[in-house]
Image 1 (tube, one colour):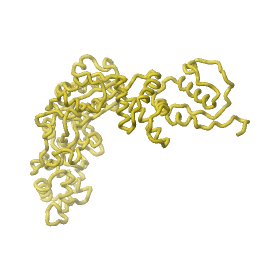
Image 2 (cartoon, one colour; image 1 turned 90 degrees about the horizontal axis):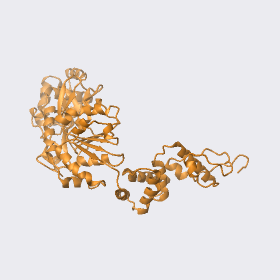
Image 3 (cartoon, one colour; image 1 turned 120 degrees about the vertical axis):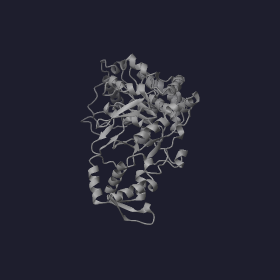
Image 4 (cartoon, one colour; image 1 turned 90 degrees about the vertical axis):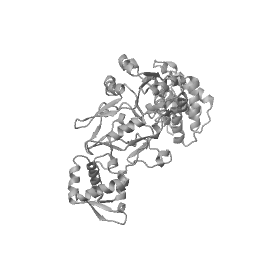
Length: 497
């Protein structure tokens, strides 16, 4: 991967004294009281595991201070003080109930904002120098137009934002994911921050991927357990993004904050996917990023009105399949230094994608099948070629095979059924015409409908009227297509069985 001065070496040292925690003791005392209040009693070892702080040197003197204040007591104990059982007194219970009015947070002990800011500067991807070899390594498992690679490396070295645009289904998200791979290895982030007594939950198990034990040599050495070692983050938002979700999110019931998307993405990548399809006007969202993009700082607001200045160290990737000229003006495009078009694949590249997708499923890629898909299904339907067709059609075929109980395989009939379910028919006349065609084929009385019928034009009837039968399922799903021919049609009235 890319080379850097000290990015991969940052490790938060474990605190040895209460002063090393760099969090007001009153914050820790209230946190311990709330934790013990819910459990009735805890041991010193349990507090050490829950809070992520060492007992000896940090928690032990803090608990002794709480005993002197008569809010905590030892109910029983063994030889080692870490095994003592602690519970709260009546005075401590009263103080705990009062603290619930401010916050109900119970979990890993928080980290100060100052320590977090220092960690962002120490782990910034801007300390990396991206080379041609780094980019090639990150993109080696992707088939795409390699002409974009000379733009990716310089964009990362600049630390500026990117604008990916082009038709849907051609891998803009996959390309963005690999851009983040180039940015370096794992980073440490705090589980939680505390600012003026307010807790901000930063670690998000849904958006942050923990590094497993043995996955990084830093996990083998002592470190501050209030921090989590995660893969460099890559946060994706889509049409659900609002301006409100870009500020601190206050939980009125739990009475603590959740970090916004861009804070969770710090030192990594933040992708605004489907840009232009949010409820917010694109101009409003773009104006929100002017200061972070130019000054590399972001301002967040507590519900008390206090503004926090946070380093903005994520690379923003705007991604859209709309026309850029319809979304942004020339002035803002100048602030986005790198604009990269992601175009549809060539036929040769699509065939390589098909081969790769087949191999990933344990299938042998038959050149005749991909030709059948392209020249009998995709192009005759007037569909532009998209990179996602290979994956999606094979997924449909897998669904059909599992439903019918046959081994996974690819043949012309399965491709036809998959494409019938996958490609959207916007013209209702075509749907009706296909239903009529299937109805006639069932009874075996006519040839397939003509082009006139497919286009909706009237055609003189050439066969006797079809007797009234049970309603026919309109094809449109793989199940309907696969079982249409096997359906039993009841005989007309008066003819018996």
